[in-house]
Amino acid sequence: MRKLLLAGLASVSLLGSSAQAGEVRFDGFPDFDSHLDILIPKYEATHPDVSISYQMNQHADHHRRLTTNLATGSGAGDVVVVDVSFIGSFINEGGFENLSAPEYDADALKDHFVGYAWNQGKGTDGNQYAIPVDIGPGVMYYRRDVADSVGASMEDVISSWDSYIEYGRKLKDQNVYLIADAAEVAQLIIYTTVKEGEGFYFDEDGSPLVTSDRFVHAFTVAKQIRDEGLDAQVRAWTNEWYEGFKNGTVATQLSGAWLLGHLQNWMAPDTAGLWGVTNLPDGIYGSWGGSFLAIPKQAKNKKDAWDFIKYLTNTSEAQLSGLKNIGSFPALTATYDDPSFDEPIEFLAGQQARHLFAEVAQKVPAVAPRKGDLIADDIVLRAALLEVLNDGKDIEAALRDAERLIKRRVR
Image 1 (cartoon, rainbow, N blue to C red):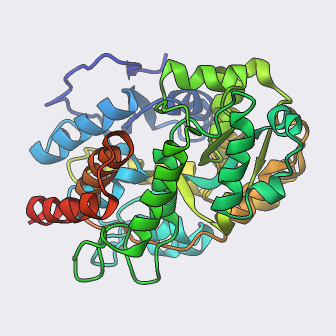
Image 2 (cartoon, rainbow, N blue to C red):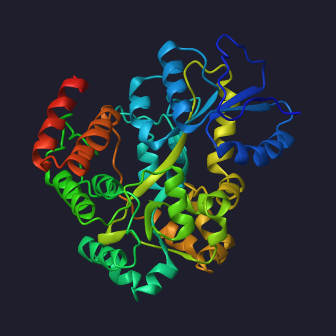
């Protein structure tokens, strides 16, 4: 039987373990275990000299553990998964293999992938350090039954933020919330309306951008939704969040395409046929989530690790398996012509939604992550925004304070 080193929440110290030739350990977070359970037997059947094992921890635990592994130079697997929100910081800390080096030649694969996701795996030196394994084309999921109850057209609802908020006012009369958390609207605007040449939080010279019009606008829209009582004030990944999807008290959710897999598999399976999906409001094309595969410098079996990464990211078999089994959307553009993209999705009332996901994926502008993004994200979205939404702090004052704190912590 395959060696499953750890699955779930438990944490086992593997520091100092030594891999035998042909052994590859994959470190990640659920639902990658479900994905690997299908793919590993196929891979090992054609690579009899290679044995793949995996170690799974919950999303936050995995990234905390990996932070420690990279800092201490030991304990990481041969292949590691990194969420897009961490990728810039991890890459620029210098703990991953340079995949542009001749022994990997990752740059030859560039044209096979969605452009913006490929660029997110680059370092500030222009080299490739991580390969996108799945992406999150930004979309809006909505309850069809709720929209029908107020005679709303989604085309009209998403035409602007004003029309989106007006939809929320109609829903309020029905005791239905527009969205679970207004903070997600601010996050979306911040991440998807970046000007060319800018980063999410910093300009090319490393100066913070958080007092710019983009951030003021993001905070203003979110505050209006909160002040008018249009959001449920429920955070993502809580039981209250799941309940809103199950009972129809939350009408829309801004997310990545990947949310479909969660909704239909475990969050709200009994609501099949009640959902639809459309573009994001205000004509935005953006990314919401995504994952990358990298090889830590401390990895013990880099050659086989790289071969396995190429299988997972650069073969239609593996990429389409992720789409069909766990709802992860392919980063490999060659898959977008697959007949499975024409399949109606029963959970979405027969909508051929994969065509929408592919269209969005190819229109998302590229934004390079920068070293201080994780710090700035924490200060802006976990602190300043909550002060505005929950405590009524003035928007411009909150952003000025955030800028000062970012400068101090990044320096």
